[in-house]
Length: 155
Image 1 (cartoon, rainbow, N blue to C red):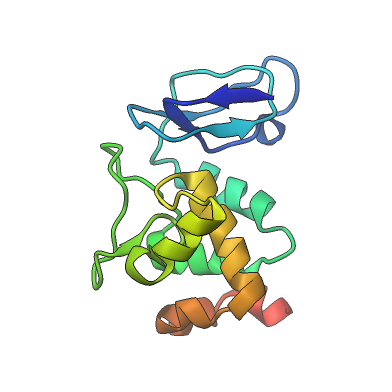
Image 2: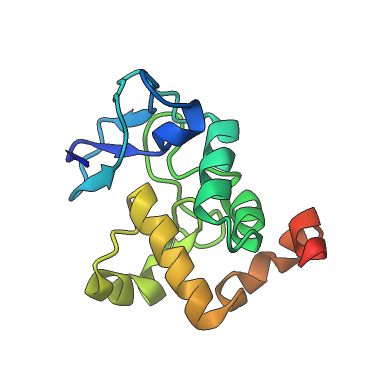
């Protein structure tokens, strides 16, 4: 396991194959610590690569595919903008990250449980926790968007 303290890893090496794979990393962002299992870390990531983010989220939410659709509707698969700034909600700027988790309402609980909503790993992990606790209710405001997806129709 490799520990990173100055970047957020947003793809696992398995997405790029084995051996000397490249794992995109967001530079210039300080996090408490993000960890992953992988072989090589390259500092040439394109943090706005929506296809890579979608692939990462499909892997992370393999058992909860509705969360991929929610991420598409909530943030267009973005944790950070092209300048490396955390994505905030258009309607409520307290909604943050790829899963647009409201830091006012959910932040204290997330922090108590050890999730950093400003990191990709923390945002995704807390979204799984929220989904296990409340289902899709925290994202009901965008349900018209994600209810139309193919993943929802399959479930």
